[in-house]
Length: 438
Image: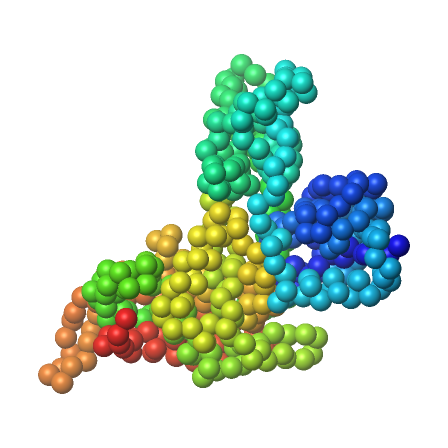
């Protein structure tokens, strides 16, 4: 008999631990290769860890809600193969390396429905046999925690395959749930809303408990500000040529590539060009050493329907054409909003772009996405009167203008480098080739 160790994998650069949300098997259960054994969560993504081998789950070393460091053994699986635990552990560790993690966020197999409080287990079994939908363990665990009944769950419109309710669907439903209104003048006890753990004190103050992801984001942002002394440089850029070129070519672009052409891939292309000119922006800090990254992997901050934030990463962005960048941007953004990103797609970033303009904001001072040393924010594009220099003298013209805000880590990026970099990105945008073929 052989023994296989289930190891907590590396779920992203800078991620050193993860929380066990739910074990889907218990000691003594038979397990099958590649079936989901455990659901885990980090500050960046919720994931499902597959079984590394056929066999029997014999031991669990951690309980649900335990925080486990990367590389720790979480469980032991006994197999019929005559192999040592150490040799299997090595294979698993390789499989969980940044380039090998696959399939951990795929849809789960079907599971039983959550019963109504008034419904017996026998009634629930009858309901499931009538053809009602099934739900993933993650959705079920959230539903149980929020006391959502089977009948209520059945009413939620799903965005997944075959109308499957995803985690994002459920969180959106909880946010939009109608709250119970209670007259504060006639009630002295705290008022609890139905959407999230919330309490209203005397009708004047509402206390809402942060969800797990918001707590992690909060900790992450505070840690970044503590780690890196932030400096922000800002330039104003004339993007009139880009606006006009996109307006003229977006229909033809879609006809050729079946992709909507947005400004984001154009901004990323300019950032990539500037990184080639200033490679010391594409670094991270480890103790007193500066690690210069040879790959250019651009993170793109994406707002989720829940209001939280995630940063999928375009790997080797310098090898992609504008069409390739557009395809990558659209694909990652869409799957991010549907909670379909794989762990490998949110790690390994070397520089991040965040688009404040999508919220109508002109200027912002973004927080660096550790362990990177810089981040750029693009503001809203607005028409403004601008003084232009011509052969005949200065003239005032209406131009499409935008601010670029570049926040950088002053430990390793001084004003010259930080300011020169954002100016170079602006230069590339202003000198955009309007004659390029799509």
